[in-house]
Amino acid sequence: KAGVTQTPRYLIKTRGQQVTLSCSPISGHRSVSWYQQTPGQGLQFLFEYFSETQRNKGNFPGRFSGRQFSNSRSEMNVSTLELGDSALYLCASSLGTYNTGELFFGEGSRLTVL
Amino acid sequence: QQQVKQSPQSLIVQKGGISIINCAYENTAFDYFPWYQQFPGKGPALLIAIRPDVSEKKEGRFTISFNKSAKQFSLHIMDSQPGDSATYFCAASSGNSGGYQKVTFGTGTKLQVIP
Image 1 (tube, one colour):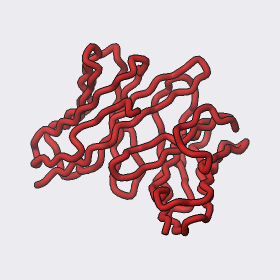
Image 2 (tube, chains in turn cyan, yellow):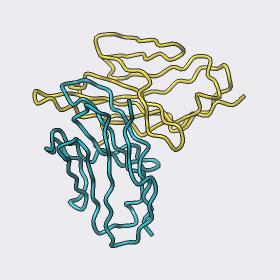
Image 3 (tube, helix red, strand yellow):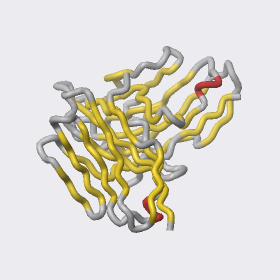
């Protein structure tokens, strides 16, 4: 069974640009969550999608957005990039039903903003 | 507001020793407490998890101890090995009637096991 696939793995952008990251969940998983990982801040929750609907959202500005497609694949977009957006962005998939617990993470997309 | 506090931030243990990482939570609605292990260049992976109806869970060299009244839980790695060197995240989650489970992570502990 294939794992969670994130693309691209690495990217470099400049301030003011926008970026789109992609996530393909494990087959059969309907929930996709996005996290931002930075040194010292750990894993910060961005948002979660289930069956193409955003179910919950973390405390990030509106520059961070996402969507989910009918095949459960998800994308997140960051507009007007700032230096502080440099981070590892992790996608995690799960079955999405009540309290199933385990999240399955991809290897992340490392974004550097210059 | 950080709802899961994790300590220490970093830990160095000799091979064969015991590694102990502690976490504390505030939200009594949490009902699932997993630990994730992350190696450099990889995403976190579930290591072991516990629900609040038990006080301890052991899987091989890894044990979770859970103290519901103190709202604390800890990970013990017995006979620590260099291959255990990684970053460990504790987490806590709660579900709702809509099926959504929100997972809150600690800030992570970087463990180094030296030969």
